[in-house]
Image (cartoon, rainbow, N blue to C red; front, top):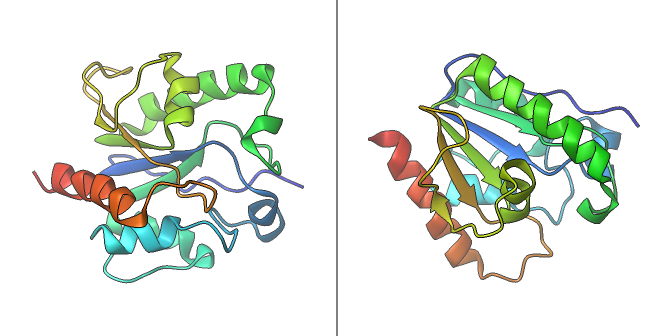
Length: 168
């Protein structure tokens, strides 16, 4: 399976960063393609998109000023399958992408993604007080995986804070 294509352009309002593609995403070539993943539903319910997109519409996020990438490119069954070496390489590559594309906000889709990227243990939801890259806001949101036990209303509420942040 090949890594899936990033959707990036300069000056995005938000760059969404996941752990890595699922096997389903690797097979289809689209981000957040597993039917149990709620990413597209969350974006719509939080007011980030005007309609609920589908995985095959992932490229359309650029039209709204949003981009997509992952900290690790290799598709796996679970994030636990990612090696420390892959995280090390991914961390450097992600930092390069953020510096190059200069999004206003980087939204990490899952605390674990941000913890791997920042190497910080204590992480709160929402805006992070000390950004990794100066002048680029870091925002931590819950994972959209169907395995997450947090109620959907709570997840959407946190993503709604992102909606309010970019409207300022």
